[in-house]
Image 1 (tube, rainbow, N blue to C red):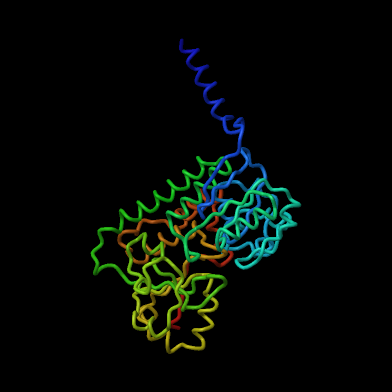
Image 2 (image 1 turned 90 degrees about the horizontal axis):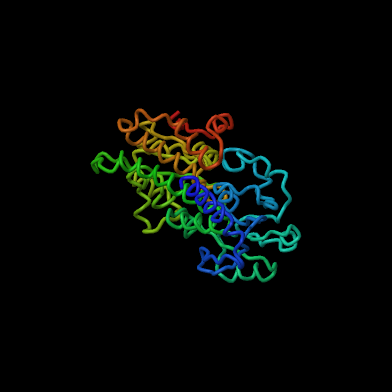
Length: 363
């Protein structure tokens, strides 16, 4: 009886494992633009177009399905601005599928020549852009999004992972990523939600990249790493939505935050500006009290989600040192990098000069 039950269970698992492949028709998915798209039951070849699309493919562990990469991805330095590229140097050897970039038009001929089963597209302006690409190539186009206004929104991102998991038959991996992220958010919330309002520092994050690198004026409202630790973000008063914001220096002086964070992507521009405008920076309380630090690059061709999580732990350690005194940031970072990208990267980030540091603007 036991032997028969075991045999039945094995047969059941086998049938379930091949059920998707054996299905007679296509799989229908509703993408991030609410487009209903028919994709092949078994997707073996994909093209990833647009900001953050290749990153999503790496997160869901589908790099082996890529027929090529955009030239902007092949040109990018293998460094801390793009951890997924650092973890996957093979991208430099894949064929080109077009120039890439947020404003570039897809190269239909190159894409068609490489015969992907599905085209994945991020940040399509509207349905017509995706529909046009699908019509011209004859290849299903699935649109994925990180959030509105080219920002990261957790639930929108989770939905993109689920869509991609369904398209590529990696639903288990998609759900694992979501559960991992939720675990990080719950840990951070548990350690910070009960901190009294008067004990929560105001934190301004400047130099955030968005369609290129920017200086101290470039920030983000409702910045996820700050939201995760319940810190005060003065930029939130400017808008009710998570989005990039350009802040006047006069307004930054009025806010006069307790802690000043400079995104590593914009650090060189901030340092150059400091040399020209030392008087402005030295009026800031955070500069006077030596509370100016970098964070890992948050955006680079869309959001580095793993860096965002690591930044949240770093900001928590800065804002609430008593609550996070036992946090080993390098170990935490490597755990996150391993889960998202398959291997630890903290040491490489340090060697490349992208790791956390104090910025001595007072000297």
